[in-house]
Length: 394
Image (cartoon, rainbow, N blue to C red):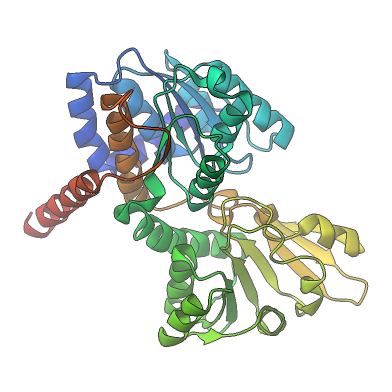
């Protein structure tokens, strides 16, 4: 892939990431990560590359892998691979076996800090036991799914190191999960399908922070929004926001678009998809590509055809056709460029400060899942406010 093109994409992202530019100046001057090996398992696109280069500017050596084979952009991998002190193992479309092998190589790298999205590295470390993570001082996890996996490891007594729940920072879940997922998922769906959203019926499955953003932007585009959530409190919130709360079989029978955001496996299984109407478009906005049971749907269908880039048609024996966007993977990255640059500037600034936090407290934080430090949350918020104030007065 063209590394030069990758560098141009990275430069575009960096130009719109003022927090990173400010933090990079500090890190280049202070070199707080000198002597540290940082393992990174994230979605490998341009904004992530800015984070990686900023960590490197702070003195770190890095080993980088992708957290999802369909979010990796090969030109970004090629650009990063040219940088001395950054080791990259990732390729778009690699098999799950290959991806997990890369995770194992990251663990072999003996990182002192792990920055990840989804918890795969944490699980790999747990499988090796405490002796396999003697150099590690902390993990910084940025997704709901990953934080849940960390809590599960801690309950089982298998989390040997401190882990910071970056996802739980207010500046992360209030902004990234809501405004980032909301805008980027619909942008990817519209790019992939070239269809109008206004006037359509949209079913949002899961009304967490990501689901809230998906519903908000669907309504803003003129859709009729239906919501499903197993939590009755969240369902009441959705109803009071003006959305129609339905049961899943009822909603999928009405919907033109179905978007999942639960983090749960098999939410839309082949049996549930029997309720879907002809022509429905299915997309997943959750971390892992298992919310929609596409293998089961393929088994039940007569044929599967790619009808547009990242859109596959499943022809059913009863004559219906169901369309899946982005192979059921995280749609905003499988069929788009992920969250808006400015959103990831905030989220990755939280990550940068989290890395500094675990390094500065090495040996002091006990094993387990730690909340994101509120003072660092506030620091990022103040940086954003200063930037916004500058734009309004300048």
